[in-house]
Amino acid sequence: MRSYEYLKPTSLKEALELLGRYGEKAKLVAGGTDLMVQWKKKIISPEYVISLRNVPELSFVTYESDLKIGSATTHRTLELSPIIREHFPILLDAVSNLGSVQVRNSATIGGNICNAAPSADTAPPLLALDAVAHIAGPQGERTMPIAEFFKGPSRTALASGEIVTHFSIPRPSPNTGMAYWKHTRRKAMDLPILGVAVLLSFGQDGKTCAKARISLGVAAPTPMRARKAEAYLEGKEVDRGALDEAGKIAAGEASPRTTIRGSQWYREEMIRVLVRRTGLMCIERAKGAAHG
Amino acid sequence: MRRTIRFTVNGDPVEVEVQPHWPLLRVLRDELELTGAKMGCGEGECGACTVLVDGKPINSCIYPVLEAEGKQVLTIEGLVSSENELHPIQQAFLDKAGVQCGFCTPGMIMSAKALLDMNPNPTEDEVRHALAGNFCRCTGYVQIVESVRHAAELLLKNAKQTGAGE
Ligand SMILES: Cc1cc2nc3c(=O)[nH]c(=O)nc-3n(C[C@H](O)[C@H](O)[C@H](O)COP(=O)(O)OP(=O)(O)OC[C@H]3O[C@@H](n4cnc5c(N)ncnc54)[C@H](O)[C@@H]3O)c2cc1C
Ligand code: FES
Ligand code: FES
Image (cartoon, rainbow over all chains, first blue to last red; front, side):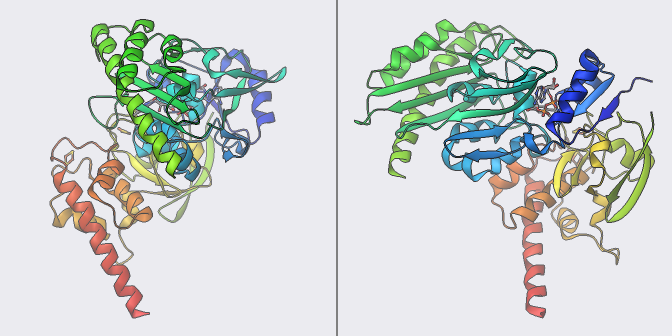
């Protein structure tokens, strides 16, 4: 009988101890929406499964000097969070169409990031927001910009024995617009063919772009930032034409594959279109934010 | 490796011996003989196995049974009243022909219940958003959406009547 021992630590300390004790024989599980399916398909066969669902320190959303999101916070909690709804529309865009209500009630942001699928819907927004991953391990705590976290499909920078505790996100400056566009064939219950996140902060004049972030999902082996396209926009007055050019540059930086869900050519074309479209949404939202 | 756990199903406390890798759905169907929740895909895709845990809809086919320990589980069987009357959402699905083969229906109704508990008067968009994880291979979803909106009306009417009687 293929089975495992299921462990339910109730503190981070206990979770780290168990992970240290069982090492490679153990797998962490948060919502299990990736892990349980991988187990059923026999992609993984851990002897010990260590659940993070009952570790209260890992599940929270706070917004003071910065935004902090516990790794085991479910997408549904984020979707319903007044903080996210009011201040971080880019995350709301990502979580409100991730799987179904049922999936979102279990699935967590930490699981989404640590599973490290090129299609992870919360990855482009976290990249655009300059999120930092906070990691606890046998050697204590360390932090890492999310841009350094992804090492390949299903591969992260986590060392053995480490747990992501939370993500911190700096408070965006005023006059910022942010949006995530999930390109799919149906609205819900579909992984993105392409995911595009854009964040634009404008200077005092409300027009000159002080900071640009453009990040892409399913455009490379890992979620990625299009840094040349970002640099192109910074210091410019951003309009449709500038966004068009940024989209072209971003498509050049990406290295999408041809898969059953879309060809390389199609994805490159769509990066152009969607960087422009998502950028225009940011301009609209920045105006709304300035008025609100 | 078997472990004994306790939780509440449809208001009744239960104690079952389980294997640690079993999903909740298996225990509901095979150990507790509550066969309302259905096994469709087994991978979280179709919603046929939807039940509520502490009021929230989840896919019980991928929900570890050991996480149900100490929690309140509600299945379609728990909606019928003690006088054996159908729940207004069940009645609404009959009235509005939201059922064809019926395989998806228990999951649809549990998702609808979770929605209406939170939002008693949802728009069509809100209904579709809440039911996006429940697949139906028979109907065109139109009758299902109508059923849920009719259920909302029935529930609001009931609430008014009870309110007036006080
Ligand atoms: C039907 C269905 C639809 C889906 N739709 C989408 C979708 O639209 N978009 C999308 O992006 N994803 C989707 N997913 C995938 C999945 O739901 C998400 O990736 C989800 O966020 C994973 O979170 P989880 O908590 O369930 O992860 P788990 O399965 O619990 O864990 C995933 C991985 O991360 C590791 N892990 C978890 N937490 C930590 C931590 N704190 N520290 C270190 N490692 C950790 C685990 O060991 C495991 O390897 C879908 C899945 C299903 C079943
Ligand atoms: S059987 Fe659980 S979602 Fe399909
Ligand atoms: S009525 Fe047959 S699957 Fe929905």
